[in-house]
Image 1 (cartoon, rainbow, N blue to C red):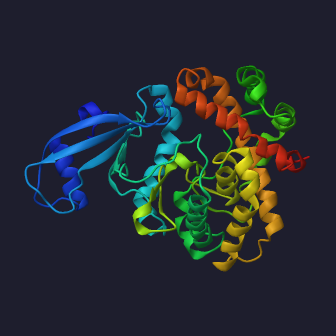
Image 2 (cartoon, helix red, strand yellow):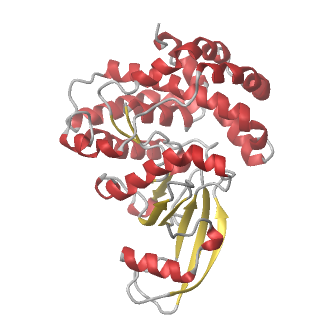
Length: 363
């Protein structure tokens, strides 16, 4: 299968071919380009490079830059991410054009099934406003995000013709963390984060450990929908040129799944605000989102049922957060940006305590 496996294998000829076949370039040819590594992570879930393009002639609509998203260099990591990369490719190829919200245009996407090497050539959104993960999301931005994603959830709600049509492209939500893995990582996690850990989180994690698989099963009980599953603020870009509210583009669809809508909403509300800010606006956001579902025709799903699912979904997030922090936390702590993100992530676990999530751990 012939495609560039790393950014170093990209050529001007390949870029010209891909952009021509996607219809964004008709006459111009890419004669040179420069690439630069972007993204706040260390390439754990993918390697991102911005590619700035030079053409042999000017052509309206020809992109000045694109983003290349490659699978990680490490073969073992690529294999672990094969499932997620395949899901993202299926989304862009089969669903993205109809989903009803802004997503990056994909000029090219392919994966080698044998080696799990993958590349996506995507629209560059660097000209739009981004928000740092450790900053508070504004209420205006939050409402714009929830308005957009509620439209997706309502359109693909369980048993609708649209959901039935696309469900074959959506993996089922599952937990990759076992009881044994969680129990093994709780102590290192607690030691690493120290006194910043909210009271009650360690006890909650130990109570949750034997019920991990059941919590995952609960998130695939009807009603389900198309869920992004990774609605952190760094996966969104905001266009303020349209006025207020801003227009939102949703990025990074590796986690797209068939799951309860609450999986998106619980993560968005719990992860993108400081505890003080979240406590002030959570009811406005959660109640407003649920009303938006109702207004768009979703029936038989009460606010109480939604809030129960929100708490179950928040429990589902805790084991991977603990395990990833225990394993990768020292790497994060090596940079100022990583330390700020770590502090924000740990502090925002307070949501599990505030929302009494221990009450919905299955018996």
